[in-house]
Length: 182
Image (cartoon, rainbow, N blue to C red; front, side, top):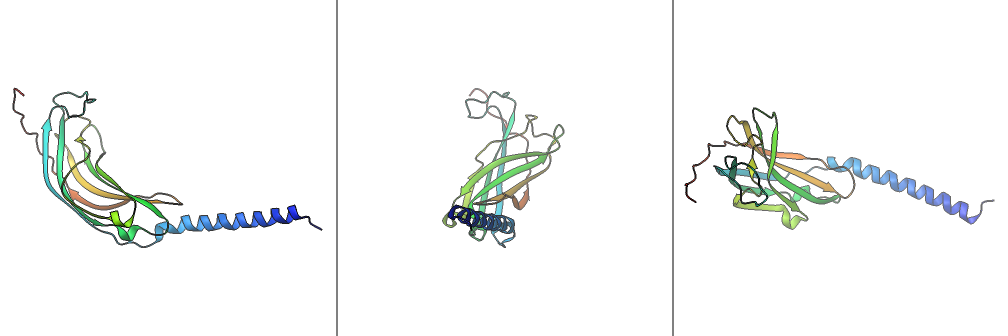
């Protein structure tokens, strides 16, 4: 009636169809698994200075402003790990509006969290990893500045999504004057 290869092809086709249905179900339900991470961001100090950064590739004007932040971060993200979580990407952004640009979002700190042992973050007096600069080269007339903690769970299977965890106001002061003759 049917030879061995036709039966093997039918069984393989059925198995692959069932496997694909299972994968679609996994990827569709993962974002709805409940998690309750705890988090708190405390901003201590914001210093704004003018001049070039330490980066040797920086070709901006010596009158450009950049900000240095000092913050604390307490977060327990262990509840965000489940059977489909490969890693978590945690980052802090500075969001603000300026006259030339409606929306500015600059990443000032990030960390890749690969397992539950690394998911408890306790950072004290931590500085921003990346410099905070405005395209206009000045923070004058900057409005609605906020510091926001984001978490991106990276699944083994499915789509990535972004969770904005907490937002605190950010006041960017006028730059400090550097001593001349240096």
